[in-house]
View (spheres, rainbow, N blue to C red):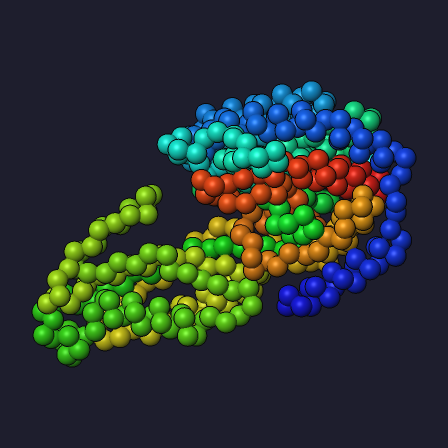
Length: 432
């Protein structure tokens, strides 16, 4: 589906729901007031969890944040569990919280506990910039989204509105650097999706009046090229051939000219090395190369990423890349391998219907229309792993700026409004 086609379908869904847009009911108005009364507490809670370092590789810190949330979910009568990962994966684990029932839509609410800021980062604490903006490591991506989930559910609980609802909250501990193999690290999340009807993801908002109906998937690729090591005076000869660096250049140029151009498809060589001898450390992303200008290079490597909107687009791109890599220059060879990471969250009609329902809630709250955000401008996230099984909507978390940088901020003034939107959305879904 093209982006214009997706927008047209989204508009049809929005119009269809808006014609019969519901104003807030008496129950929903009480729910909104409860969110308002809890807002100061919610911001204090956010400050508390931000000030606990939970970089993905800080397993103790990730679990500590998980335990703070676990206590909070226990206090609103959710059944909680901590799911540890195998020691060799070097990941902390995941927090799940659940209510059991059979009323309305079965919901899966997705967040993550980890951040990109490890223990050695100088950016560690929640600091107010002004009366509404705070510098906060992971406050925007995505502890703020977790807090929105918690305090929307807390308001529903306080109003007695969760009776007999089935809601699963899944806070993963390794979204920023996903544990491998994926079959283990995302097993519990996928199983939760199979027991649900709808998944709502609370990753960083892209704007107060946007939501995410599609995300591109991500895949890694690695290219290893070999050539004949020889004196440079013999390059291009029948005996020596082209050398590894010319072959690497040919292949990357072929990728650029022959694979580039499809909507939503991008690929990027993030590192390239060539020479006589190479040493590359995949864990640190660093390496060294040795070579001389009078020696034909015998080795070259390149590593990169591939982003796509569907499995079909991914496979088509991979096949083109394989064909280009196989057409070797004389006396060279190339090995191209791919690794899967995040699947694509395809823009389905079910996702667009959810957007229409969120739009209706936003209008009822007087918050304006909510539109679909361009998937070409979003990265991958955990909703991608469940999109095959349920209708999804993402980007419902806090607003801010500078995510993944020491300038990350969270806009505290929007938390209350976004929590109201979430609480009413959940209420209406569990009434269906």
